[in-house]
Image 1: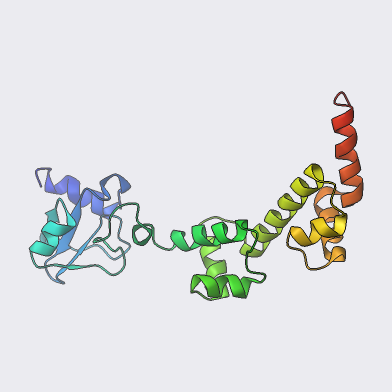
Image 2: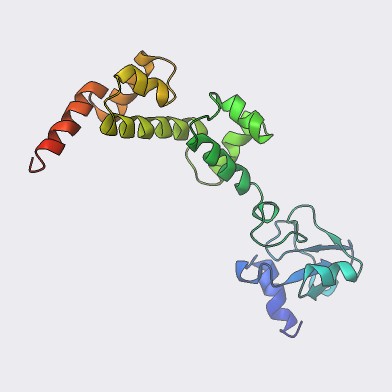
Length: 194
């Protein structure tokens, strides 16, 4: 590495994301190499070697860190870490055949429901249950506005298991019943000036 060792070490100390994927450091006392953003405690400057690629570090005889996974390519699911699980969960919840319960969703993702809630909190997302409710309500609004299907059919198509639960959730969100909301939308289409 041609850059000043002091600058490179500062990048490690501050976990500078600008160097992620461009700089790898190896610790001579442990035999492990990492990405600069690794959460592991930082080594003493005299115990650090710098490499431009993961292959160079491996070629020098160092093992990949199990925390930051420096051997993975940038942008891959392994590189993104636990955020990938949240993205997969959101994608599953957006589909029409999403798992019904949080436990089923977590099982499909290969984690526990408690861990899934923790991942959502870590990555700044709403809780999985709240997100699923929003998705169902959003789908119900679209179906109410674009189809003449009976309210019960809309409720079941949006993923609700009972008409009563749908009516309660919709009224809590919109302040009016689904029937009144549909009528209001229909009247607004007929008279756009109101």
